[in-house]
Amino acid sequence: MRLDTLRSLSGVRACALVGEDGLPLEMQGELGDVLAAELASLRASSERVGRRLGAGQMTRLTFTSDLIEVVAVFTGSFTLGAALLRGTDTRSAQQALARIAAGLGAPGGLPSPVLPDGAPQGNTAQDSPVQSSAAVERR
Image 1 (tube, rainbow, N blue to C red):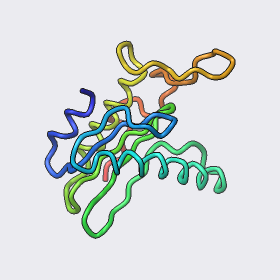
Image 2: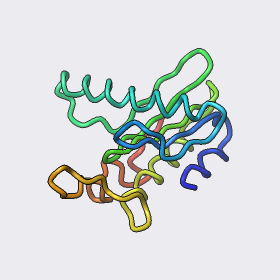
Image 3: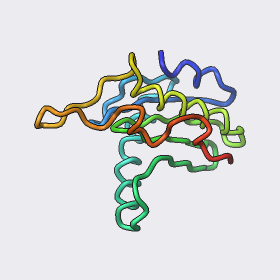
């Protein structure tokens, strides 16, 4: 499964891959279903903030609470995210998310969602805002 590399990282408590409709395509961990639902909501909220601020397309979101750190990557119509124990170095998770995101548009990745006119929506590797692990900002 695509998220296996994330689950094996130290500190990861849950991870999820969510489609444009907000439904989980893959999830792992006891709270994977909760994370998947919240990732869909976070994406919608962050995109609204990005539009209102004129910041362009959102590609990544990270936040920290008392107990966890959540890292999410937005690529095409997909959202990937991981919840880690607070204090865990998130760089490995960020790099893994970027690699998975880049692979979604590659052959054997997920199919592109189709627009109402029948044309595929931008979910190819060249359309992806995250191209490689080098694109992940170092924390």
